[in-house]
Amino acid sequence: MTNAELRSLIPNVIHEVEGESLLIDKLAPWLASANKWLTDNFVGEDYSLPESLLPLTKKIIVFKAFADAVPSLDITLSPAGFAVINTDGRAPASKERVERLIASLLSTVDANVLPFIINLLKYADYRSTRMGQYWLGTFMYGLDDAMANKRDKDLLSTYRSMRDSALRFESELSQDYLGKEVMKHLRLARYAMPSDDCTLVMCDLIRRAELRYIASHARDQKAKCPDDHEVWHLAQPILRELRYWPELRDMWEAEMGEEFAVKPFKNTVKGGFYF
Figure (tube, rainbow, N blue to C red):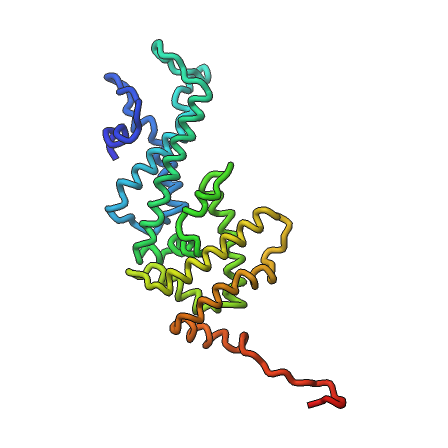
């Protein structure tokens, strides 16, 4: 990234005078930190980003770095201690304005991370990486659901909190109702191009049930998790829909058929009506 590219993304920055450090040099520590944040949480160390995603990547890194750097940009360390850089007659920004700027920058980061992770998941080689598997770990693909539920937490913390509940729900759903093979098939088929109607319908049903489960446990932190009775109710519409799709139904019956087979009643108590 060049200084000109950096400046094109950040508005209202006064140009350097002759002999002054370039903006990209001033932000270097924060740019490195933002790049590591993006790698650690989204890309992974073992994956090289496709060229088509580089413009979006740069934008996320720059806005994240600038948001982190803002509180320190007018502070310098001198031999005598910390000092405020001379503003040359410009009035310093109020605390409220600085806070609004940081909030705006972080909001821009969130807005760009949303399409970033969804576009990353379209690449099969990314989906096979450890980080790709992390983002495919639930049926909340991407961050849209986390954005809709974000309150005081940042977007990534909101997603992680929701993901923990989603994994508990999916574990119970897989073990007792759908089986591992159906769940695995739906995860892989979700990104087949184009996805068939069966996959889209089933994935959306599971995602909706998952979000209801998450919302329920967010309201009641002391509720049993997972709650077998609650999962049973949420699984019923999914099981009813599954029976309409022959490929999934056959796969489900092969693994879970005996669990759901109707067993004839047999009286084991000997007496006048024993049979």
